[in-house]
Length: 468
Image (tube, rainbow, N blue to C red; front, top):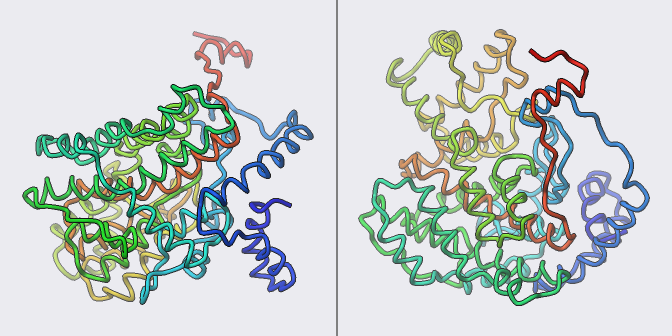
């Protein structure tokens, strides 16, 4: 059994309290604090495991494709291999087999902190192993060493017009960082395919390290009169450096950022940003180019702008109904929203059929740190009322809240009121997941993605339907 397959069993081993199995699994977890060395040990084993699997089952049918799937955004179509996370309709996201509550329990935390460090999640995503505190500390320091931005990117950010959307600035800056690409350089020099993953790893580490600096620079330029982001402190973790550069010193906000960056990191491979990164990377575009493309997808209203839309809707609700709102008035407002042909933002999900666990952990954070905040109380009231209304309406497959129903309210509470910027935070987080997978895509030799497309006439002919 491979290291990765053992690590996937860990949640079941823990829940069954099978001590002997846990000891066996623990023996197979690397103690090295050098992430690249850990990966160098894992890669050949995983290559061999998948090679054997494909030799035995490569021709096995795994599903059927309907006409509706082809027209309906490929929903439910099994067509991608994505190792780092799996989305279960009832349980929600699992990162390498671990649920969000399990990650909150098992991943290392900052001294005195209660939320998992995103560095720990990245280690888990890319290795399948729960890291030690020493491994996470190494990663924090490694990212701090790699964080400096090249001067041309700083100049570019400083010269963007203030009316250019933060996500446009973010994507453009990431693209410009590809001047630093180790992979692009190695490819042009004819590096052996077997070593592709090593250079993609180096680029991914560099990019993740630099993203908080890029994001903070954009924030300061747009909302803080171009004030300096300051210097990276190698003694602080990735999130703490990020909040410092943004200009927020409240320890609870840093804790929120650790949670936010952890839970937004990955959500299976079929969403727009993850799929875009995978698709563009399959052309052997370097990680800077593939991640920038992913961010252009994330900037779309149907993907990364949802928490902003929730806040706009909540603000309009508050303005129309006033302060304390009765359940009856709230219920009427929701029905009026639905009858006018609109949706209740933050509710429903393409895959999930239960309350999003990312919503639940944010709700728990709010109950602990801001239980009397008026906007949180409004969100909590909606949680009590909206699902029942949606069930009565009978149209929603999932009447429960998703991650976006809560995140904006938490950011607002701590003073980050610039809604246009929220998707940039989402983007910084999403790098942890899509770049972990990008390393593995090159390690496993995944080919250029090229599905077969068909015209409507072609589909009609295929199924024996009459055209016209």
